[in-house]
Image 1: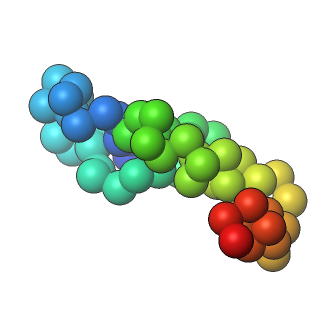
Image 2: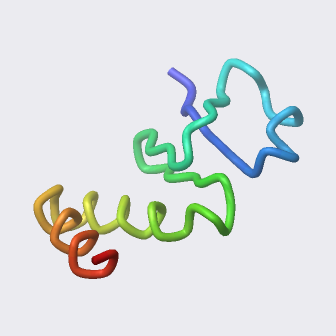
Image 3: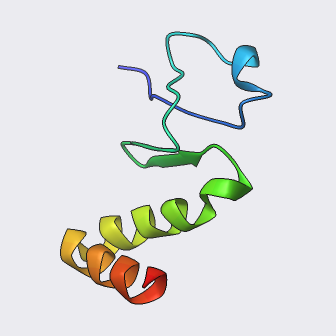
Length: 66
């Protein structure tokens, strides 16, 4: 099964339509993609979640955002 990917909105039409999604961050197997600079924090939190679990990602989100 092919990976689902996302990218900056100005380039999304250049990707194969069967692989693209319009989410801010897309995790597909070992591949993590993001839509661009505006989603950097969500992108970073997705790595925290993948490495340390959802509780740690939520703690980081609450600590850094509030």
